[in-house]
Image (cartoon, rainbow over all chains, first blue to last red; front, side, top):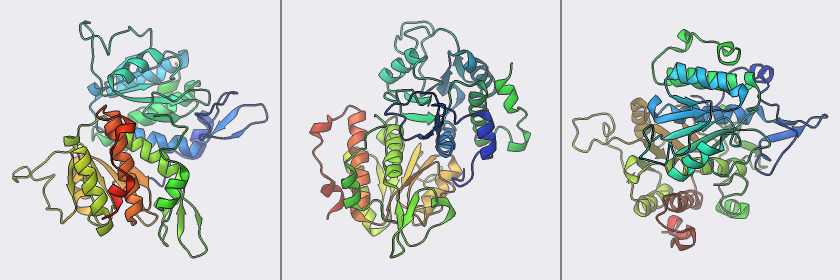
Length: 198
Length: 198
């Protein structure tokens, strides 16, 4: 994918609110936040959101759907995550994560993934810790308040909003299938709304 | 690896000249170049060099040495590339690339890699084209004059200098082995000079 054009027009990113951070900011997110709004909300650099999404898409496209899993326990993450797993065909977790799934080989539903994507390193910390322990490639959508240690790839984005996560997973699903040669870009039948609205 | 500290002190990056681009700049490198020196040389953003090197290290650490290959045909790339392949144990190419190695399964030395790293997308275009065709994950060190299409991960850096490439491959080798648990960070016996000087 060319590095010199954004995945969707910048306006689309802005209306989806991918750039709206939280009121908190820590040292980890320093480089992604480019200013602070008058009401205290931190603004995430949209260019970096786009850049990291591209890297994630490129990376993920080299794996089969059975090689990765997505997790999102936050209410607003459920729809995007479920939809993504349905469209792409990978595993997803939107409820409580049963400890040991990645580490305890004697469990019946033990799985070995190569990549684990979480919507928030804080709410999804259980799977993240196990993935980290197992040496799985860890990816997370990180807001301005998240810690980014234990992560291999950080995608800075507003991970609280349904529309924002919807857009991210929509782009991920679409370009994954296109890169895999499963659908043509113009034949991709889903819209951003399918990924974000109930 | 934490996102909030650089791999080596910024001074080290600067003395190695990782930030010195060429006199040319194209649309692909727009976002990596942050200013133009009085003599016309473009200056690459060191922060982005560091950031992308970290992503590359994280990604590569999930693969075995037999899964990837590095290529560098330019004179100044030979020492860093050879040294990297010796330390890490992966394949390397510093001379003419024999066409078909990645695409022609009937050749005796046919190989299937999962990642291919090249020092310059222009001089190493043969392996890059075949890797692209085969759906291999492609990584390249790109200067301000390079085209970045066909690439999955772009690492902006001065890819003409021996010291600059030396530093990049030194960091790659060191952190790869550390992440793999093969050596401890303090026990890594090589220096940047081992990777750059004859």
